[in-house]
Image (cartoon, rainbow, N blue to C red; front, side, top):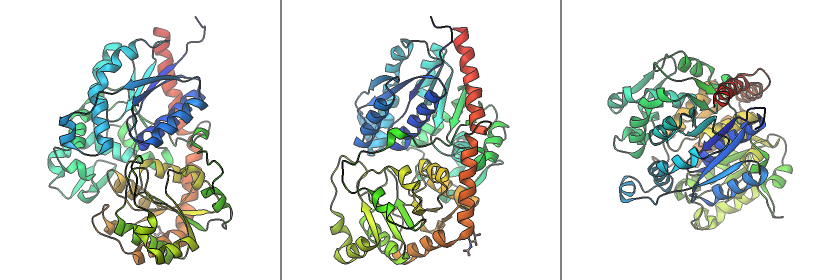
Length: 464
Ligand SMILES: *[C@@H]1O[C@H](CO)[C@@H](O)[C@H](O)[C@H]1NC(C)=O
């Protein structure tokens, strides 16, 4: 037996890069803080990108204990509720969770803590309670969205009828910003929220990839019981810094980075709507038009299919010859998964047209890049509001959700200019970056939170 008790933490992410990426960054953070880490990976993954990222992670951290969690196939019930490959996987993971019980019980050294995805509370709870392991969720969105999650059962009945949901001391969320699936009482997400939210008080804590400089007031309101009474401790442990293992091998082909190297500082607009949003063809054409009209250089990641294992139509056909010519003169179009943090960290990038998925928001904050928010689904309007309220970006509320209307190139071009030209937005973005870096420096709020957690886990080890 070793003399120093070994803190052993197991992590269980759910499907999609938006959930996997923060879990892997958290794993890296825990390894850096002298924890022994077990990573449980639901198999098979939905996308190739997830498979690649996992394999890069395990090559970089051979000391991590890897457990494959083979899921039960999705059933008819799930398929009747949703056709979305990611949501089907969420449902499969939930239905397969009981299989984890023997896996977790046999881990050695015994677990000091178990951190699992925000969508798994109900199925995981009985397992961890019988094993007496301190357990936490990693909520992979903003603290503001978490407030909504914790507050949801009390508003669910009225949310569909009232115009604004007033979360005490956090935000007034207009009905139009509520994730649309949560307005449908029978959607998979409404069911998960309704079933899981009241059980939050049974957790030992909630981890959030956020920090005081971004959502200090929200963290405070949550921990002071202003939102919901009886919440467990809420830990802001972000921003999770992008890691080395995420770098993508380019095999000698021209990379976005070498193109960026040739552009002047702060001159390029980076455009990406994340790992899972596929934009309609009409809108893709208008975005192309808008980018050319903005007059700025741009690096544009185009995704026409939600799941990267499927093949799409050629971009030339979607955009047409004329527009394609203008685009090639002014920018670079990329059609595969890119290492976003390498792009955002590049000095030539001056702004980010983003869907405002939480990981993208945090990465932009980390590198101090202003955002032109264009929310597409889910929690993204709530995140976009946080950015525009914070003054480090632009959000055109009237554009609505993805597919609600086709926004014209002219308007898009104007909004891009607004983000790139407004000096005050640039200054605010730099301040957010400083606050992000401070949070994870010695004595910073997030570092203190990690140390607190480690103290709790150490006691658990000593009592084993
Ligand atoms: C610049 O952005 C700030 C913050 O969003 C806004 O208040 C201000 O009106 C903008 N200035 C101009 C000239 O558009």
